[in-house]
Image (cartoon, rainbow over the protein chains, first blue to last red):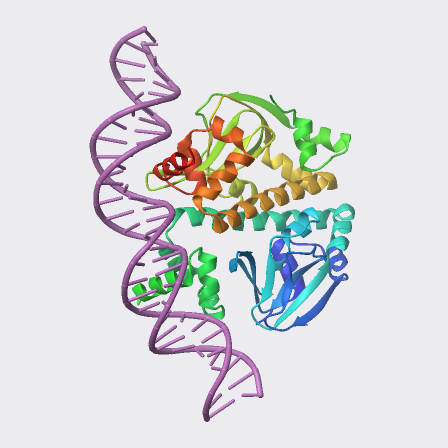
Length: 189
Length: 189
DNA sequence: AAGAAAAATTTACAAATGATAAGAAATCAC
DNA sequence: GTGATTTCTTATCATTTGTAAATTTTTCTT
């Protein structure tokens, strides 16, 4: 299972053929292996990526522990938000959890298009809006539910994620330790 | 202390006089009292607001407790994100914590301008991007730090907030109970 | 200014989660 | 396929945070 770039772009905000072509002409395909560190938090990232095939995670480090706060799979957009938005170092590292095929787009090319093409500008708006809604509901969900409830919800809404990603990453995504998640999983048996 | 609408708009994304005028021509000023419920989660909100003067909070309810997840003060934009982005019921209630003066803008007028004026489209993009960065770092901060650290950080970065808002709201914003926050405050004396 | 109402604090106890360590299971590398 | 490495689970104990109730403090109303 994989996703074509045209479909990925349209799912964010439907574009005319012309504007879509403008975007796609600046996009190239890259294949990278599992464990590759695509984005590092100590440098400015000059590209955006779209996942054609595979799954990735974004994490920050606190002391020696890694905290995963986002997963991206087929159809998702992979960006270092602080690089993309503020042209500053990001807080996130992004690691490939499977061999991946990605579409890559130069951030500065995209910025140019924002000022030239109103459809692309609205595509960029919609992209940020959709990410915002997702982040905000994830944040509220965190506040509203216990770790156990959050895990059960993840089980029912994203069962594929649980299968493709190792438990430790799921745990930190849920905001708990792997030990704690093991307890929860044992309870549910 | 209060903020003029032109400055608020420019702080998000600098606009030409022409585009700024297009926006401002659709904006009107409203004065509303403390405790007024500006936005309710059981209806679609058709306006955006900008805070000229005052402070507000967004909250959701879990069983009988209210969970505050956002504060907005002078210069901030007040929107029901799910209404604004998806034209659906929001998850948030927004309550005025002081007598407020707000600038109101029709959401549908803004949507029209997005398709007509590329500057406004980019203004809308930047607005969503800035909110996204804020929400994302708030989310990561939650995962990274203990309640005590989060309170200390709030004390040093937003001391005015602590003074203007009652402790119970601060507690739920930090993701803890008022009792827990009292303990932390007692420790810091 | 006085009384009422709401909010904040304190205390005692319960529940959830974290830390550490040891063993079992799964995965990786050759 | 086998041994080595990593990940997951289980158990124990410590810490943090929650819940409930009583008390103090602050704010609101008249």
